[in-house]
Length: 117
Image (cartoon, rainbow, N blue to C red):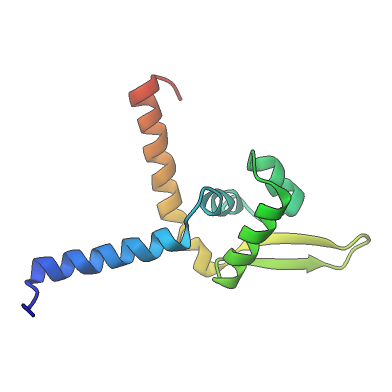
C-alpha cells in the first residue's frame, strides 16, 4: 500500500468530515429544525407551523434523533396541561455558523437564478 501524500491525506480527512456531517443531517428536516431552534426554544406545534410540510411522526422522529445526538434538548414544563419545549444545546449552537452560511448562500443563489429574494 502506498503512503498518502500530505495533500491526499488532508483531502481524505476533509471528505470524512463531510461524510459524517451529511450522515448526521441527512434528509430535508434536521437542518430546518436546527435553524428554527436557533431563534429560541419552540414547542412541538410551533415547529410544525414553522417547518412547512413536516408531518407529526417525522417531526417527532427527527427531534428524537437530534436529542440523541446532543444537538437539542427536550424540556418538560410542569403546567396544566404539560408542555414541552425544544431548545438547542451548547453543542447544537456549533452548527449555527453552518446554518447561517447555508441560508446566506441559498438566498444569494435564489437571487442569481431567479432574480428575487
